[in-house]
Image 1: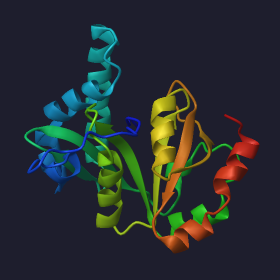
Image 2: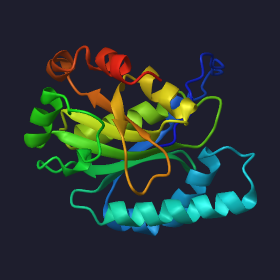
Image 3: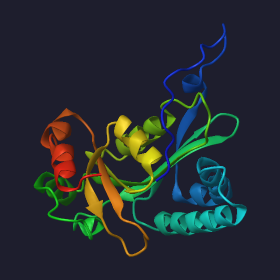
Image 4: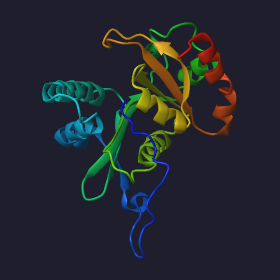
Length: 221
């Protein structure tokens, strides 16, 4: 998961000038178009990472990203939303979490009962990645992409995983309303992953109230 922190200040647009929020267009992308866009998406992934990274590391990251994207595209229910102006500026994608709860395998401790119920009802959607091209006026694009993805699938809960050391991404997601509920271990990851969830709607938010506090009590950051 890659996300850029929100900027607190934004230049006021001149008369007749579109703001970034107005100029950015969001649209749904199916699995076949996502495959066609894989090269552009990989470029977006690299641009969203730290630009100081070594070229060799960026190459490995690009290949790793393409492998993960290919695997996600093959999953049932895969969906993607992209943001664009005259070029691709962001994307968010993922797939529905199976009702058997397999996606939560490796969660440290007991999964909260409310999340078990939402999973069993088929209302959880895993947001695999959110990529935003760095730009001082890209306020809210990542959050809008995630909201579009979840609303299109009528999900009641979004779920995502973030490397514990990726503090900028964690800070961004928390500022967008995601709740950190604990840790999960995946064999494909070299580090522990933080588990974050995003309630959709007031009823779901009320059901999950207090989860973030409980998580930080059990798993201090």
